[in-house]
Image 1 (cartoon, chains in turn purple, blue):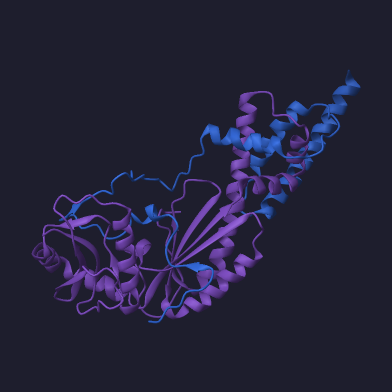
Image 2 (cartoon, chains in turn brown, orange; image 1 turned 180 degrees about the vertical axis):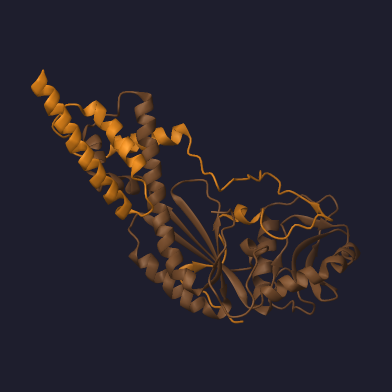
Length: 248
Length: 123
């Protein structure tokens, strides 16, 4: 029977705490896969995403978890064994790298109207333009004005991101910027030691308390290292390492 | 490893779609897509705001509930000065950067006013 492959763990990784009863472990030498049976003509929906994420999160307290891309289907357990047997050493090293590490995510969203007001009120010439009570008369002028406002919003967002990175970065093993579709959004991922989570909580809480009303902060974790599956991590003493996933 | 939750840290992201393109890719196996969800690939190195977005930002400036100021001569050129200077003065930093930009723009505005007065005297 076909199986959905959720993630890679160590052999003997306990199943306790995993709420989805059909999840089982396929052990292959130094690694194992967490899989769940699925129909051959499977049609995946939101419930399947929930089950995938729940399983990986629930497995995390018991050892490192390397998430496999959602929707990965193998023909059966034997196929999983055959393939993992070939790449086991690679995955084993990766699991060793991730020992004791978890991912947390911090997302900032600026309230667009509030941020624009803040920028205008702190820029006298923009404030004069705003007090005109009418838009610039030509389309190119309006586009230019909006473009410059976009740059100012990006600067505001990036400054907050730098402040966040300065604080959380001291406790992080690695950092990644996650893509966002809006100039008012900033999405960070941090790879931290699990034992540092209370300290990171305190830093993020203090940062949130200092934010203006118009900035929302979403803080998520602990998660498996979704954003750090390929990042090179330095061996030896902990060091802060910036890892800009998209090369920023 | 014992992990506890806090009141403000959630255990799951609000947008599950974000995890759909994450994780190890195992080419040997089939990838089944999520029904009804189109995976969008975003090139995060270039976040391009469309012209519509720029116009929306310009509208937002216009909608701010600020008292109208007295008419200033030569104002049509002021927008060009503002946008030119903000583009020259873009630096990283929130209000700090904006304040520096504002100071530069003020210098330009004073120069603009001086030029305008000179033109008026000449006329």
